[in-house]
Amino acid sequence: MAKRRLSQQQRNRIQAAQHAILEHDDYGHGLVVSHQGGQILVELQSATTIECKIKSNLGTIVCGDRVAIETTAQQQHRVVGILERDNLLRRVDGFGQVRSVAANISQLFVCLAVSPEPNLFLLDQYLLSAEQQQIEARILLNKIDLATAGEDPFGLRQIYQPLGYRQVDTSVISGVGMEEFSALLPGQVSVLSGVSGVGKSSLTSWLLPQEEIKIASISAANEEGRHTTRASRLYHLPGGGDLIDTPGVRGFSPFIDDSRPLALGFREIREIGNGCRFHNCLHRNEPKCAVIAAVDSGVIAQSRYQNYQKMLRQLAAG
Ligand SMILES: Nc1nc2c(ncn2[C@@H]2O[C@H](COP(=O)(O)OP(=O)(O)O)[C@@H](O)[C@H]2O)c(=O)[nH]1
Ligand SMILES: [Mg+2]
Ligand SMILES: [Zn+2]
Image 1 (spheres, rainbow, N blue to C red):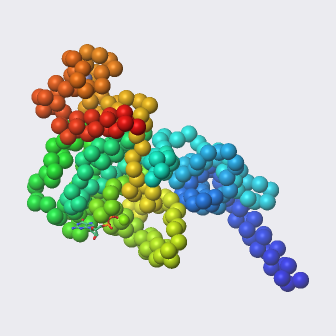
Image 2 (image 1 turned 90 degrees about the vertical axis):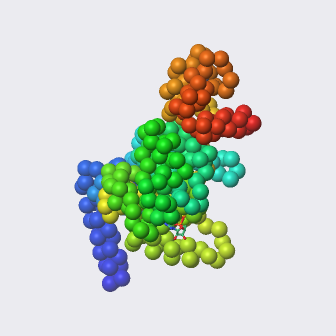
Image 3 (image 1 turned 60 degrees about the vertical axis):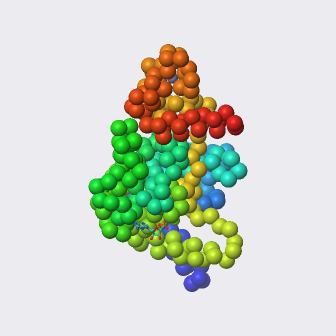
């Protein structure tokens, strides 16, 4: 029957395509580019993207994960293992639960803006969290068009440059700094984070002019009152490098690991703290504390030390 022959032909074509995939040496390993619910898309090194199921008990799989895949006799793909991660970006949800957001991130842009005025406590929480998770954090100060040329808004550079945090000042509107920002992306897996209103969506659609159209239509379709979460996506940027984007990474509450001394996540406190009299000094009011001395002499910024103390108090309060 014609109908049957057609479906056999389709099957052959599908099989040929799958064999073509199988012929690549890289088959068996891939990069998770999308994950929503039980649906996961894995990109093979051949740039072919396949839909995969997940073997039970594998734990959480997130965008950016490198995974091993097995293909059944029925040509179904299944993720059977997660390769070792360089890092795992985690956040705290509204119920205080720790959630995995993305893996193998090479840089996290903490996005701030000239307006709304940056919250330096939140910035220090992001920086601490990134430090603990071994993710390179960078500061992005957007809406620089609203500041006076040549000034250092909020004294950010003065505080963070000596600590080794790279800062880029941008304006999506005037284009200032956008070249410098773009130049930081090739060869990296980046995440943009920060509070609402600083310009993350604007920066994202500037980076992904094609994709943002899709994002807009998805959210329009969701405006039926039903709560839906958009899939996490890993995008290949036209200029090189990858961007992992989802509302979950954009405005996340930083995860702070209280099982380790907080001071280790403050670069300058960690370093200067080596000079304290007590090796387990918390730099609060201990005698011969090198950190307190450095705050007094202006080597450590007041705001950084105050934010460190505030985080200590918050952790103590549970
Ligand atoms: N003046 C100025 N406004 C900007 C800039 N970038 C974004 N905006 C505006 O800031 C508002 C918030 O931007 P949006 O991208 O939605 O921020 P998000 O909440 O972080 O995603 C919008 O009205 C943007 O047009 C910028 O560089 N300069
Ligand atoms: Mg937005
Ligand atoms: Zn100390």
